[in-house]
Length: 566
Image (cartoon, rainbow, N blue to C red; front, side, top):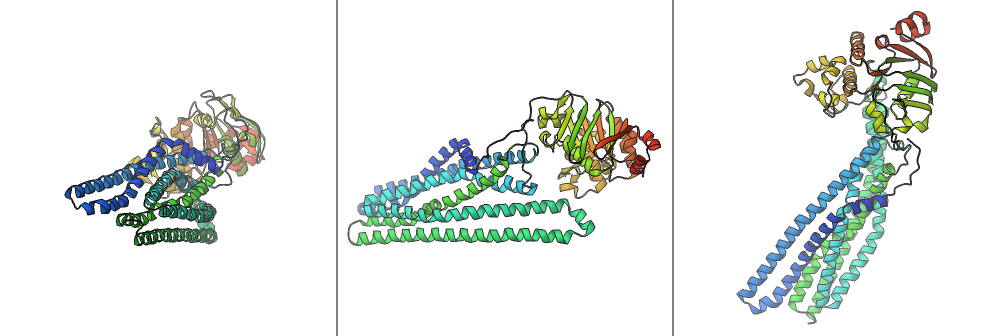
């Protein structure tokens, strides 16, 4: 992994990428929606021609041709709308999915992107709402072009009747769009601010859910809820502001469109009264004046949606364009290799150095919890190699030369607060459904009693974050998942803090048995796990200060005895 600097990717570039990837669907959608608008515009034109010619002849043949023409127009309108919107919405949905996956990938790679300024709740909002609104640009552009087609066809048809009617439509349309373009800028800035505040409220909710139990424990829930109320109130006020701006925009657009339609109708009536246009042309002009309000409304709303899409794209750029902390290297570790920490300085670690040989079961007894957390961050690659001094080697290869995927494929670091996902016991233990040691992992983690409690066994439904499980059950479920992965190197951080002493003894023996011949590192103060290890390393003040078996350390090190004895 090498340091790298990457130029920011602005929201405009994201929109261009979305348009470029869907150019084929957009062309097809534009043609179909343009055909739809042209057919819609042809309807009042056809009515005018029918009045002009058919009613004068009063023949059944002319009436039949007129009815057939209207049937063709109506069929064209129906089919072109149906298939045009199908093409565009499919492309829209697919593009939104692509951006959601890309944003989620950045959120799942904390080493690859420096997005610490954005909390998980904010990234969730960006990956959902902002991704959807950015992808809307794929529908906006074809609808904008098709609305322009309707306006142009109407203007040409009215110009054929009287040039003044056509010019009135063109000048009026340009004037309306000029006024609304100015208003749309306010919508874009207000929407971007609203999305940021909603994202902060979402992040606050995520934090509250995670810390709800501790908050209840020391009575801090009221203060936390008050903090959320303030953030949510800010988001509500901004939402009201955006609604007002949108309302003003929509009202202005509707009023201007109505004024234009009324002006065209009155002008056509005056021209008919003066005898400068025929009755059929009057019918066409009035019909077009009424019809043109819909494409004008759509045409006038497009700048607003463009600004919203751009604001959302700028939000996504905060994640996607964040400069990489590191660039993954091309190397892969040797399977079944050892783990070496050489002179690592990070946080409270002060030149930490130790080696876990291939197939060895080693325990680290940390006297300071902060040092254990710093070590776990380094091993889990949550702290990238440039963020600390020293070297960590996995299977003989430095972490700096390995991709994050290669590291996690060969070494699993299971934190003490591992997440439990909504689903079942089985999907939590074996998310990919490919584990060959699932039964052994369930038994080794002593999760068997949890499975036996329920009629559905491993298919028992688990709520989000394991809300329907006790603390000890969640911890054993997390341990079972780590064991079922059966990786070359397994690092466990305090895997038994929430279980009773008897269960802890059984789990310690089971881990040693199941992981025999596989490299295992346990960071813990549990006497049972320390006793099951081949050797124990004492981590004090950021360095290894002692090394021996658990029993020898108990017999000869009073400080160690006080730290781990229960």
